[in-house]
Image (cartoon, rainbow, N blue to C red; front, side, top):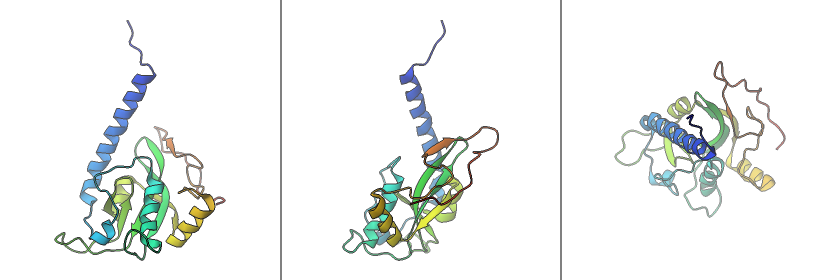
Length: 189
């Protein structure tokens, strides 16, 4: 008798594989996690994960610090970044916030260099380490005022550009040589 997988079995296996990949990535990112002061951490939820909600979570982090009367202290030098990340199996759309060098949390050692806030993981990372582990490619960057204008115009958190994935959120990579991604171009917004 031959065993066959039904749709539920396939979905269950896909969830297990995705979970294992996320745990592996989290372990790779662990050395790059940075403790930050209370002003930078304001409004974050470090023990939560928001898989699939990167555009909204990254934008909300910026908005909380940019809008008058926002929930957190104002912060200069933030950049909302839209781009892609990849692993051996797929390329996916992603958003994160890049922050200039920032003071370290009390008792956490020397001041941090350039940082990334990942809204999905609700954590701060050394920018270079995050880029290396996530294999991220920035395709578009927005100052806070540009974020507000695009959000008002489109009524969505992103993406607002036409990048390597076109309109898709992810694409499987070809097993013998990369994504074969179309060239990046900034499309209509």
